[in-house]
Length: 581
Image (cartoon, rainbow, N blue to C red; front, side):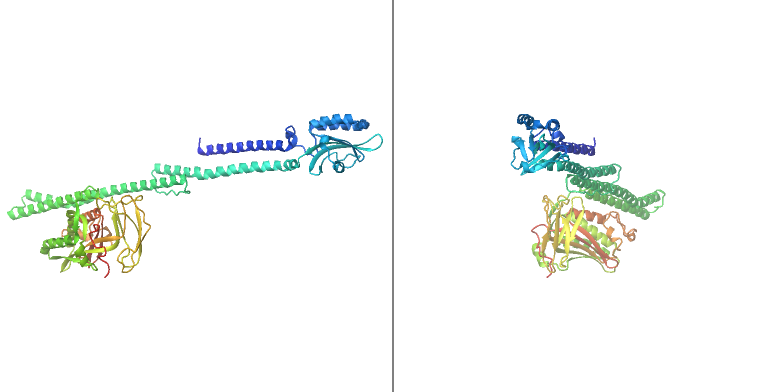
Protein backbone atom coordinates (compact mmCIF):
# COMPACT_ATOMS: atom_id res chain seq x y z
CA UNK A 1 0.00 0.00 0.00
CA UNK A 2 1.41 3.39 -0.99
CA UNK A 3 2.07 6.17 1.51
CA UNK A 4 -0.49 8.35 -0.25
CA UNK A 5 -3.28 5.78 0.32
CA UNK A 6 -2.17 5.22 3.91
CA UNK A 7 -2.35 8.94 4.58
CA UNK A 8 -5.79 9.15 2.95
CA UNK A 9 -7.12 6.29 5.08
CA UNK A 10 -5.55 7.77 8.21
CA UNK A 11 -7.14 11.17 7.69
CA UNK A 12 -10.48 9.56 6.82
CA UNK A 13 -10.38 7.61 10.08
CA UNK A 14 -9.55 10.79 12.00
CA UNK A 15 -12.49 12.61 10.40
CA UNK A 16 -14.87 9.70 11.14
CA UNK A 17 -13.79 9.54 14.78
CA UNK A 18 -14.19 13.30 15.10
CA UNK A 19 -17.74 13.12 13.70
CA UNK A 20 -18.72 10.29 16.06
CA UNK A 21 -17.32 12.15 19.05
CA UNK A 22 -19.10 15.31 17.98
CA UNK A 23 -22.46 13.54 17.62
CA UNK A 24 -22.02 11.89 21.01
CA UNK A 25 -21.14 15.23 22.60
CA UNK A 26 -24.19 16.86 21.00
CA UNK A 27 -26.43 14.05 22.28
CA UNK A 28 -25.13 14.32 25.84
CA UNK A 29 -25.39 18.12 25.73
CA UNK A 30 -29.02 17.88 24.57
CA UNK A 31 -29.84 15.50 27.40
CA UNK A 32 -28.18 17.83 29.88
CA UNK A 33 -30.11 20.83 28.56
CA UNK A 34 -33.57 19.29 28.07
CA UNK A 35 -33.43 16.64 30.76
CA UNK A 36 -35.57 14.39 28.57
CA UNK A 37 -33.95 11.54 26.70
CA UNK A 38 -37.28 10.45 25.22
CA UNK A 39 -37.77 13.72 23.37
CA UNK A 40 -34.27 13.79 21.83
CA UNK A 41 -35.27 11.85 18.72
CA UNK A 42 -38.07 14.30 17.86
CA UNK A 43 -36.57 17.42 19.39
CA UNK A 44 -35.05 18.86 16.23
CA UNK A 45 -37.82 17.81 13.88
CA UNK A 46 -40.75 19.40 15.77
CA UNK A 47 -40.96 23.11 16.16
CA UNK A 48 -42.40 24.16 19.48
CA UNK A 49 -44.76 26.54 17.77
CA UNK A 50 -46.26 23.74 15.68
CA UNK A 51 -45.78 20.68 17.86
CA UNK A 52 -45.11 21.94 21.36
CA UNK A 53 -46.11 18.62 22.99
CA UNK A 54 -44.85 15.11 22.93
CA UNK A 55 -47.04 12.25 21.77
CA UNK A 56 -48.16 11.43 25.32
CA UNK A 57 -48.95 15.05 26.07
CA UNK A 58 -50.73 15.40 22.73
CA UNK A 59 -52.91 12.36 23.51
CA UNK A 60 -53.97 13.81 26.87
CA UNK A 61 -54.62 17.17 25.23
CA UNK A 62 -56.90 15.56 22.64
CA UNK A 63 -58.87 13.80 25.39
CA UNK A 64 -59.36 17.09 27.21
CA UNK A 65 -60.26 18.80 23.95
CA UNK A 66 -62.90 16.13 23.30
CA UNK A 67 -64.39 16.73 26.74
CA UNK A 68 -64.42 20.48 26.10
CA UNK A 69 -66.37 19.94 22.94
CA UNK A 70 -68.78 17.25 24.14
CA UNK A 71 -69.21 17.91 27.83
CA UNK A 72 -67.44 21.10 28.91
CA UNK A 73 -69.12 20.96 32.33
CA UNK A 74 -66.81 18.09 33.33
CA UNK A 75 -63.88 20.53 33.15
CA UNK A 76 -65.24 22.00 36.36
CA UNK A 77 -64.60 18.68 38.12
CA UNK A 78 -61.40 19.21 40.12
CA UNK A 79 -60.85 15.49 40.70
CA UNK A 80 -61.08 14.75 36.99
CA UNK A 81 -58.68 17.55 36.21
CA UNK A 82 -56.30 16.33 38.92
CA UNK A 83 -56.26 12.87 37.35
CA UNK A 84 -55.33 14.33 33.97
CA UNK A 85 -52.73 16.55 35.65
CA UNK A 86 -51.18 13.47 37.24
CA UNK A 87 -50.80 11.90 33.81
CA UNK A 88 -49.23 15.10 32.48
CA UNK A 89 -46.94 15.34 35.47
CA UNK A 90 -45.51 11.93 34.60
CA UNK A 91 -44.39 13.32 31.26
CA UNK A 92 -43.17 16.60 32.81
CA UNK A 93 -46.13 18.69 31.62
CA UNK A 94 -48.97 20.56 33.32
CA UNK A 95 -52.60 21.66 32.94
CA UNK A 96 -54.31 25.05 33.11
CA UNK A 97 -58.08 25.68 32.90
CA UNK A 98 -59.37 29.22 32.72
CA UNK A 99 -62.97 30.45 33.00
CA UNK A 100 -63.22 33.97 31.71
CA UNK A 101 -60.32 35.67 33.54
CA UNK A 102 -60.17 33.22 36.45
CA UNK A 103 -57.81 30.25 36.66
CA UNK A 104 -60.02 27.39 37.83
CA UNK A 105 -57.26 24.80 37.79
CA UNK A 106 -53.47 25.08 37.66
CA UNK A 107 -50.86 22.36 37.97
CA UNK A 108 -48.72 22.92 41.07
CA UNK A 109 -45.51 22.44 39.05
CA UNK A 110 -46.46 25.35 36.76
CA UNK A 111 -47.82 27.73 39.37
CA UNK A 112 -46.79 31.26 38.51
CA UNK A 113 -48.40 34.47 39.81
CA UNK A 114 -48.13 36.18 36.45
CA UNK A 115 -49.32 33.20 34.47
CA UNK A 116 -52.90 34.48 34.08
CA UNK A 117 -51.60 37.70 32.58
CA UNK A 118 -49.30 35.86 30.17
CA UNK A 119 -51.88 33.43 28.85
CA UNK A 120 -53.30 34.34 25.44
CA UNK A 121 -56.81 35.78 25.31
CA UNK A 122 -59.90 33.83 24.39
CA UNK A 123 -60.21 33.05 20.69
CA UNK A 124 -63.44 31.35 19.68
CA UNK A 125 -61.97 30.57 16.25
CA UNK A 126 -58.98 28.73 17.80
CA UNK A 127 -56.57 30.10 15.19
CA UNK A 128 -53.35 29.77 17.24
CA UNK A 129 -53.78 26.71 19.38
CA UNK A 130 -50.05 25.85 19.59
CA UNK A 131 -47.34 28.34 20.49
CA UNK A 132 -44.90 29.49 23.15
CA UNK A 133 -44.86 32.15 25.84
CA UNK A 134 -42.53 33.71 28.39
CA UNK A 135 -43.47 34.25 32.01
CA UNK A 136 -40.73 36.17 33.71
CA UNK A 137 -37.55 34.15 33.18
CA UNK A 138 -39.49 30.96 32.42
CA UNK A 139 -40.19 29.72 28.93
CA UNK A 140 -43.21 27.51 28.05
CA UNK A 141 -44.61 25.73 25.06
CA UNK A 142 -48.31 24.97 25.03
CA UNK A 143 -51.38 23.69 23.20
CA UNK A 144 -54.72 25.38 23.95
CA UNK A 145 -58.37 25.05 23.09
CA UNK A 146 -60.98 27.75 23.66
CA UNK A 147 -64.57 26.65 24.27
CA UNK A 148 -67.80 27.95 25.88
CA UNK A 149 -69.00 26.64 29.24
CA UNK A 150 -72.72 25.64 29.56
CA UNK A 151 -73.38 28.89 31.41
CA UNK A 152 -72.02 30.84 28.44
CA UNK A 153 -68.74 31.88 30.03
CA UNK A 154 -65.55 31.64 27.99
CA UNK A 155 -63.36 28.68 28.82
CA UNK A 156 -59.76 27.95 27.87
CA UNK A 157 -57.85 24.71 28.21
CA UNK A 158 -54.00 24.72 28.28
CA UNK A 159 -51.60 21.80 28.28
CA UNK A 160 -48.15 23.33 28.93
CA UNK A 161 -44.57 22.24 29.24
CA UNK A 162 -41.73 24.35 30.59
CA UNK A 163 -38.71 24.64 28.32
CA UNK A 164 -35.20 25.99 28.87
CA UNK A 165 -34.56 29.25 26.97
CA UNK A 166 -31.40 27.67 25.59
CA UNK A 167 -33.28 24.88 23.93
CA UNK A 168 -34.73 27.25 21.35
CA UNK A 169 -31.32 28.64 20.59
CA UNK A 170 -29.83 25.18 20.40
CA UNK A 171 -32.70 23.95 18.27
CA UNK A 172 -32.21 26.81 15.83
CA UNK A 173 -28.42 27.04 15.69
CA UNK A 174 -27.23 23.51 16.42
CA UNK A 175 -28.06 22.06 12.99
CA UNK A 176 -26.16 24.92 11.39
CA UNK A 177 -23.27 24.46 13.80
CA UNK A 178 -23.22 20.75 13.04
CA UNK A 179 -22.99 21.40 9.32
CA UNK A 180 -20.31 24.07 9.81
CA UNK A 181 -18.24 21.89 12.12
CA UNK A 182 -18.52 18.92 9.79
CA UNK A 183 -17.43 21.13 6.92
CA UNK A 184 -14.52 22.45 9.01
CA UNK A 185 -13.47 18.93 9.96
CA UNK A 186 -13.59 17.74 6.36
CA UNK A 187 -11.81 20.84 5.08
CA UNK A 188 -9.15 20.57 7.78
CA UNK A 189 -8.61 16.92 6.93
CA UNK A 190 -8.27 17.71 3.23
CA UNK A 191 -5.87 20.58 3.90
CA UNK A 192 -3.76 18.44 6.24
CA UNK A 193 -3.75 15.65 3.68
CA UNK A 194 -2.67 18.06 0.96
CA UNK A 195 0.01 19.58 3.21
CA UNK A 196 1.44 16.23 4.26
CA UNK A 197 1.29 15.02 0.67
CA UNK A 198 3.17 18.07 -0.58
CA UNK A 199 5.74 18.00 2.23
CA UNK A 200 6.34 14.25 2.36
CA UNK A 201 5.05 12.38 -0.66
CA UNK A 202 6.19 14.81 -3.35
CA UNK A 203 9.78 15.15 -2.06
CA UNK A 204 9.97 11.38 -1.78
CA UNK A 205 8.66 11.12 -5.33
CA UNK A 206 11.37 13.56 -6.47
CA UNK A 207 13.95 11.42 -4.66
CA UNK A 208 12.59 8.33 -6.39
CA UNK A 209 12.84 9.95 -9.83
CA UNK A 210 16.35 11.15 -9.01
CA UNK A 211 17.36 7.64 -7.97
CA UNK A 212 15.95 6.33 -11.25
CA UNK A 213 18.03 8.92 -13.13
CA UNK A 214 21.14 7.77 -11.32
CA UNK A 215 20.23 4.15 -12.06
CA UNK A 216 20.06 5.06 -15.75
CA UNK A 217 23.47 6.73 -15.54
CA UNK A 218 22.27 10.33 -15.63
CA UNK A 219 24.08 12.40 -12.99
CA UNK A 220 23.83 15.77 -14.71
CA UNK A 221 21.05 17.23 -12.59
CA UNK A 222 20.71 19.04 -9.30
CA UNK A 223 18.37 18.13 -6.46
CA UNK A 224 17.34 21.22 -4.51
CA UNK A 225 15.80 20.58 -1.06
CA UNK A 226 12.52 22.42 -0.51
CA UNK A 227 12.54 22.31 3.29
CA UNK A 228 14.80 21.94 6.31
CA UNK A 229 13.01 19.00 7.91
CA UNK A 230 14.09 15.36 7.80
CA UNK A 231 12.98 15.04 4.17
CA UNK A 232 15.01 18.15 3.29
CA UNK A 233 18.05 16.75 5.10
CA UNK A 234 17.60 13.49 3.21
CA UNK A 235 17.46 15.45 -0.05
CA UNK A 236 20.63 17.34 0.88
CA UNK A 237 22.41 14.09 1.70
CA UNK A 238 21.17 12.55 -1.54
CA UNK A 239 22.37 15.59 -3.51
CA UNK A 240 25.77 15.38 -1.82
CA UNK A 241 25.94 11.69 -2.71
CA UNK A 242 25.02 12.49 -6.34
CA UNK A 243 27.60 15.25 -6.52
CA UNK A 244 30.36 13.08 -5.10
CA UNK A 245 29.38 10.19 -7.30
CA UNK A 246 29.46 12.47 -10.31
CA UNK A 247 32.86 13.80 -9.26
CA UNK A 248 34.09 10.25 -8.76
CA UNK A 249 32.92 9.24 -12.22
CA UNK A 250 34.40 12.36 -13.77
CA UNK A 251 37.65 11.69 -11.92
CA UNK A 252 37.61 8.10 -13.13
CA UNK A 253 37.06 9.30 -16.69
CA UNK A 254 39.87 11.81 -16.23
CA UNK A 255 42.14 9.06 -14.94
CA UNK A 256 41.25 6.94 -17.93
CA UNK A 257 41.95 9.84 -20.26
CA UNK A 258 45.22 10.53 -18.44
CA UNK A 259 46.17 6.88 -18.78
CA UNK A 260 45.53 6.99 -22.51
CA UNK A 261 47.49 10.21 -22.82
CA UNK A 262 50.29 8.73 -20.75
CA UNK A 263 50.53 5.69 -23.00
CA UNK A 264 50.42 7.94 -26.06
CA UNK A 265 53.12 10.22 -24.66
CA UNK A 266 55.35 7.33 -23.65
CA UNK A 267 54.91 5.75 -27.06
CA UNK A 268 55.77 9.05 -28.73
CA UNK A 269 58.83 9.71 -26.57
CA UNK A 270 60.16 6.16 -26.94
CA UNK A 271 59.48 5.91 -30.64
CA UNK A 272 62.24 8.33 -31.71
CA UNK A 273 65.14 6.88 -29.65
CA UNK A 274 64.11 3.32 -30.48
CA UNK A 275 64.02 4.18 -34.18
CA UNK A 276 67.46 5.82 -33.85
CA UNK A 277 68.90 2.81 -32.04
CA UNK A 278 67.38 0.48 -34.61
CA UNK A 279 68.91 2.51 -37.44
CA UNK A 280 72.39 2.52 -35.94
CA UNK A 281 72.22 -1.20 -35.08
CA UNK A 282 71.18 -2.00 -38.64
CA UNK A 283 74.01 0.21 -39.88
CA UNK A 284 76.49 -1.74 -37.77
CA UNK A 285 75.00 -5.05 -38.93
CA UNK A 286 75.15 -3.98 -42.57
CA UNK A 287 78.78 -2.94 -42.22
CA UNK A 288 78.26 0.79 -42.58
CA UNK A 289 80.46 1.38 -39.54
CA UNK A 290 83.52 0.16 -41.43
CA UNK A 291 86.00 2.25 -39.49
CA UNK A 292 86.76 2.36 -35.78
CA UNK A 293 85.73 6.01 -35.67
CA UNK A 294 82.28 5.30 -37.20
CA UNK A 295 81.78 2.28 -34.99
CA UNK A 296 82.66 4.32 -31.92
CA UNK A 297 80.22 7.04 -33.03
CA UNK A 298 77.44 4.53 -33.64
CA UNK A 299 77.96 2.84 -30.30
CA UNK A 300 78.15 6.19 -28.50
CA UNK A 301 74.89 7.32 -30.05
CA UNK A 302 73.21 4.06 -29.09
CA UNK A 303 74.52 4.48 -25.55
CA UNK A 304 73.21 8.04 -25.33
CA UNK A 305 69.76 7.02 -26.56
CA UNK A 306 69.60 4.10 -24.14
CA UNK A 307 70.64 6.44 -21.34
CA UNK A 308 67.91 8.90 -22.32
CA UNK A 309 65.36 6.10 -22.37
CA UNK A 310 66.50 4.93 -18.95
CA UNK A 311 66.23 8.48 -17.61
CA UNK A 312 62.73 8.76 -19.09
CA UNK A 313 61.66 5.51 -17.44
CA UNK A 314 63.16 6.60 -14.11
CA UNK A 315 61.39 9.96 -14.26
CA UNK A 316 58.14 8.31 -15.26
CA UNK A 317 58.42 5.88 -12.34
CA UNK A 318 59.18 8.73 -9.93
CA UNK A 319 56.27 10.80 -11.23
CA UNK A 320 53.90 7.83 -10.87
CA UNK A 321 55.00 7.28 -7.27
CA UNK A 322 54.61 10.96 -6.48
CA UNK A 323 51.21 11.10 -8.15
CA UNK A 324 50.01 8.05 -6.21
CA UNK A 325 51.50 9.35 -2.92
CA UNK A 326 53.71 6.30 -2.64
CA UNK A 327 57.06 8.07 -2.67
CA UNK A 328 58.42 8.40 0.90
CA UNK A 329 59.83 11.70 2.16
CA UNK A 330 62.71 12.11 4.59
CA UNK A 331 62.01 15.46 6.19
CA UNK A 332 64.66 17.38 8.06
CA UNK A 333 65.18 21.03 9.03
CA UNK A 334 66.85 22.84 6.13
CA UNK A 335 68.09 26.42 5.99
CA UNK A 336 66.82 27.42 2.57
CA UNK A 337 69.28 30.32 2.26
CA UNK A 338 72.29 28.05 2.70
CA UNK A 339 70.65 25.39 0.55
CA UNK A 340 70.06 27.83 -2.32
CA UNK A 341 73.57 29.24 -2.04
CA UNK A 342 75.10 25.76 -2.22
CA UNK A 343 72.84 24.80 -5.13
CA UNK A 344 73.74 27.96 -7.04
CA UNK A 345 77.43 27.29 -6.55
CA UNK A 346 77.19 23.62 -7.55
CA UNK A 347 74.93 24.13 -10.56
CA UNK A 348 76.88 27.21 -11.62
CA UNK A 349 80.01 25.10 -11.81
CA UNK A 350 78.25 22.55 -14.04
CA UNK A 351 76.61 25.11 -16.35
CA UNK A 352 79.61 27.37 -16.51
CA UNK A 353 80.97 25.30 -19.39
CA UNK A 354 77.81 26.25 -21.36
CA UNK A 355 78.35 29.92 -20.68
CA UNK A 356 75.46 30.14 -18.22
CA UNK A 357 75.98 32.11 -15.02
CA UNK A 358 74.10 30.89 -11.94
CA UNK A 359 73.92 33.35 -9.03
CA UNK A 360 72.18 33.62 -5.66
CA UNK A 361 70.31 36.70 -4.41
CA UNK A 362 67.74 37.75 -1.85
CA UNK A 363 64.28 38.82 -3.00
CA UNK A 364 63.56 42.54 -3.19
CA UNK A 365 62.40 43.90 0.19
CA UNK A 366 63.74 40.97 2.19
CA UNK A 367 65.21 41.81 5.59
CA UNK A 368 68.59 40.18 5.02
CA UNK A 369 69.77 40.74 8.58
CA UNK A 370 66.69 39.03 9.98
CA UNK A 371 67.18 36.06 7.68
CA UNK A 372 70.84 35.82 8.61
CA UNK A 373 69.99 35.98 12.31
CA UNK A 374 66.97 33.68 12.51
CA UNK A 375 67.43 31.56 9.34
CA UNK A 376 64.78 30.56 6.78
CA UNK A 377 64.30 27.03 8.06
CA UNK A 378 61.84 24.66 6.42
CA UNK A 379 61.03 21.00 6.91
CA UNK A 380 61.98 19.35 3.63
CA UNK A 381 63.46 16.30 1.93
CA UNK A 382 66.89 17.55 0.89
CA UNK A 383 67.34 15.18 -2.05
CA UNK A 384 63.90 15.84 -3.51
CA UNK A 385 64.18 19.59 -3.02
CA UNK A 386 67.55 19.45 -4.81
CA UNK A 387 65.86 17.61 -7.65
CA UNK A 388 63.26 20.38 -7.91
CA UNK A 389 65.97 23.01 -8.23
CA UNK A 390 67.90 20.88 -10.76
CA UNK A 391 64.80 20.35 -12.89
CA UNK A 392 63.95 24.05 -12.88
CA UNK A 393 67.49 25.14 -13.67
CA UNK A 394 67.91 22.52 -16.42
CA UNK A 395 64.61 23.61 -17.93
CA UNK A 396 65.76 27.25 -17.91
CA UNK A 397 69.11 26.31 -19.45
CA UNK A 398 67.41 24.75 -22.47
CA UNK A 399 65.84 27.99 -23.63
CA UNK A 400 68.61 30.54 -23.24
CA UNK A 401 68.79 32.87 -26.25
CA UNK A 402 70.79 35.81 -24.89
CA UNK A 403 74.48 36.40 -25.25
CA UNK A 404 74.81 36.80 -21.49
CA UNK A 405 72.95 33.84 -20.03
CA UNK A 406 71.99 34.11 -16.40
CA UNK A 407 69.94 32.07 -13.94
CA UNK A 408 69.21 33.58 -10.53
CA UNK A 409 68.13 31.72 -7.39
CA UNK A 410 66.31 34.11 -5.04
CA UNK A 411 65.14 33.54 -1.47
CA UNK A 412 62.74 35.75 0.46
CA UNK A 413 60.05 35.81 3.13
CA UNK A 414 56.38 36.67 2.60
CA UNK A 415 54.03 37.52 5.44
CA UNK A 416 50.25 37.22 5.21
CA UNK A 417 50.14 34.29 2.79
CA UNK A 418 48.02 31.22 3.45
CA UNK A 419 49.11 28.17 1.52
CA UNK A 420 48.09 24.55 1.65
CA UNK A 421 47.95 21.37 -0.34
CA UNK A 422 45.51 18.62 0.48
CA UNK A 423 46.58 15.06 0.94
CA UNK A 424 45.48 14.25 -2.61
CA UNK A 425 47.74 16.86 -4.13
CA UNK A 426 45.14 19.54 -4.70
CA UNK A 427 46.65 23.02 -4.53
CA UNK A 428 45.16 25.74 -2.37
CA UNK A 429 46.56 29.26 -2.11
CA UNK A 430 45.41 32.74 -1.34
CA UNK A 431 47.54 35.86 -1.32
CA UNK A 432 45.90 38.26 1.10
CA UNK A 433 46.83 41.45 -0.73
CA UNK A 434 50.09 42.18 1.06
CA UNK A 435 50.57 45.92 1.30
CA UNK A 436 47.52 46.65 -0.86
CA UNK A 437 44.71 46.68 1.68
CA UNK A 438 42.69 44.16 -0.37
CA UNK A 439 40.48 41.48 1.04
CA UNK A 440 40.73 37.83 0.26
CA UNK A 441 38.77 34.79 1.26
CA UNK A 442 40.25 31.33 1.43
CA UNK A 443 39.40 27.87 2.49
CA UNK A 444 42.52 26.48 4.00
CA UNK A 445 43.86 24.06 6.54
CA UNK A 446 47.03 23.56 8.51
CA UNK A 447 49.90 21.15 8.61
CA UNK A 448 49.65 17.83 10.32
CA UNK A 449 51.75 17.26 13.41
CA UNK A 450 53.90 14.62 11.76
CA UNK A 451 54.64 16.28 8.45
CA UNK A 452 53.74 18.89 5.90
CA UNK A 453 50.73 17.14 4.45
CA UNK A 454 47.67 19.27 4.81
CA UNK A 455 44.16 18.11 5.47
CA UNK A 456 41.43 19.79 3.50
CA UNK A 457 37.79 18.86 3.18
CA UNK A 458 34.26 19.93 3.81
CA UNK A 459 34.35 18.45 7.31
CA UNK A 460 37.81 19.74 8.23
CA UNK A 461 37.96 22.99 6.41
CA UNK A 462 39.01 26.27 7.93
CA UNK A 463 37.60 29.41 6.38
CA UNK A 464 39.72 32.49 6.79
CA UNK A 465 39.31 36.07 5.67
CA UNK A 466 42.34 38.26 6.03
CA UNK A 467 43.12 41.91 5.41
CA UNK A 468 46.59 43.39 5.07
CA UNK A 469 46.61 47.16 5.37
CA UNK A 470 49.23 49.06 3.38
CA UNK A 471 52.62 48.83 5.08
CA UNK A 472 51.43 46.39 7.73
CA UNK A 473 53.63 43.60 9.02
CA UNK A 474 51.03 40.98 9.78
CA UNK A 475 47.48 39.91 9.63
CA UNK A 476 45.20 42.71 10.84
CA UNK A 477 41.92 40.92 10.73
CA UNK A 478 40.89 37.31 10.68
CA UNK A 479 37.30 36.18 10.94
CA UNK A 480 35.01 33.31 10.17
CA UNK A 481 37.44 30.68 11.40
CA UNK A 482 36.20 27.18 12.05
CA UNK A 483 38.43 24.49 13.49
CA UNK A 484 38.99 21.03 12.06
CA UNK A 485 40.39 17.80 13.42
CA UNK A 486 44.15 18.31 13.91
CA UNK A 487 44.06 21.08 11.34
CA UNK A 488 44.24 24.84 11.49
CA UNK A 489 45.17 27.77 9.30
CA UNK A 490 46.49 31.24 9.85
CA UNK A 491 48.17 33.97 7.88
CA UNK A 492 51.84 33.23 8.54
CA UNK A 493 55.26 33.77 7.01
CA UNK A 494 56.33 31.53 4.16
CA UNK A 495 59.66 31.25 2.43
CA UNK A 496 59.81 31.96 -1.29
CA UNK A 497 62.36 30.36 -3.62
CA UNK A 498 62.51 31.79 -7.13
CA UNK A 499 64.37 30.46 -10.16
CA UNK A 500 64.64 33.34 -12.63
CA UNK A 501 66.23 33.28 -16.08
CA UNK A 502 66.68 35.72 -18.92
CA UNK A 503 65.83 33.22 -21.62
CA UNK A 504 63.33 33.25 -24.44
CA UNK A 505 60.29 33.25 -22.17
CA UNK A 506 57.03 31.34 -22.52
CA UNK A 507 54.02 32.36 -24.54
CA UNK A 508 50.92 33.25 -22.52
CA UNK A 509 48.82 30.46 -24.07
CA UNK A 510 51.47 27.91 -23.11
CA UNK A 511 52.16 29.18 -19.58
CA UNK A 512 49.12 27.53 -17.83
CA UNK A 513 50.23 24.09 -19.06
CA UNK A 514 53.95 24.09 -18.23
CA UNK A 515 53.47 21.92 -15.12
CA UNK A 516 51.48 19.25 -16.96
CA UNK A 517 53.26 15.99 -17.61
CA UNK A 518 54.70 15.44 -21.07
CA UNK A 519 53.75 18.98 -22.02
CA UNK A 520 56.30 20.79 -24.14
CA UNK A 521 55.85 23.92 -26.18
CA UNK A 522 56.26 23.64 -29.93
CA UNK A 523 59.64 25.30 -29.74
CA UNK A 524 60.80 22.64 -27.30
CA UNK A 525 60.15 19.68 -29.55
CA UNK A 526 63.47 19.57 -31.28
CA UNK A 527 66.68 17.68 -30.93
CA UNK A 528 68.53 20.60 -29.40
CA UNK A 529 66.38 21.01 -26.30
CA UNK A 530 65.02 17.48 -25.92
CA UNK A 531 63.67 16.63 -22.48
CA UNK A 532 61.12 14.15 -21.25
CA UNK A 533 58.38 16.67 -20.49
CA UNK A 534 58.24 15.41 -16.90
CA UNK A 535 60.71 17.75 -15.20
CA UNK A 536 58.31 20.53 -14.24
CA UNK A 537 55.50 18.05 -13.46
CA UNK A 538 57.82 16.22 -11.04
CA UNK A 539 58.85 19.55 -9.50
CA UNK A 540 55.21 20.44 -8.90
CA UNK A 541 54.46 17.06 -7.27
CA UNK A 542 57.45 17.37 -4.93
CA UNK A 543 56.63 20.97 -3.95
CA UNK A 544 53.03 20.05 -3.18
CA UNK A 545 54.29 17.06 -1.23
CA UNK A 546 56.08 19.61 0.98
CA UNK A 547 52.85 21.52 1.57
CA UNK A 548 53.86 24.33 -0.79
CA UNK A 549 52.83 25.85 -4.09
CA UNK A 550 54.57 26.53 -7.38
CA UNK A 551 53.72 29.01 -10.12
CA UNK A 552 55.27 30.45 -13.25
CA UNK A 553 55.52 33.99 -14.60
CA UNK A 554 56.97 34.78 -17.99
CA UNK A 555 57.20 37.35 -20.74
CA UNK A 556 58.33 36.39 -24.20
CA UNK A 557 61.82 37.77 -24.79
CA UNK A 558 62.39 38.74 -21.14
CA UNK A 559 62.62 35.36 -19.43
CA UNK A 560 60.74 33.20 -16.96
CA UNK A 561 60.40 33.10 -13.17
CA UNK A 562 59.35 29.94 -11.34
CA UNK A 563 58.20 30.83 -7.82
CA UNK A 564 57.97 28.26 -5.01
CA UNK A 565 56.34 28.99 -1.64
CA UNK A 566 57.04 26.67 1.28
CA UNK A 567 55.83 26.89 4.89
CA UNK A 568 58.47 27.89 7.40
CA UNK A 569 59.15 25.59 10.30
CA UNK A 570 57.40 27.12 13.34
CA UNK A 571 59.64 29.24 15.53
CA UNK A 572 62.51 29.09 13.05
CA UNK A 573 62.10 32.39 11.22
CA UNK A 574 61.38 36.02 11.98
CA UNK A 575 57.78 36.57 10.96
CA UNK A 576 58.49 40.25 10.48
CA UNK A 577 60.99 39.59 7.74
CA UNK A 578 59.90 40.69 4.33
CA UNK A 579 57.81 43.63 5.50
CA UNK A 580 58.26 46.96 3.84
CA UNK A 581 60.96 49.01 5.51
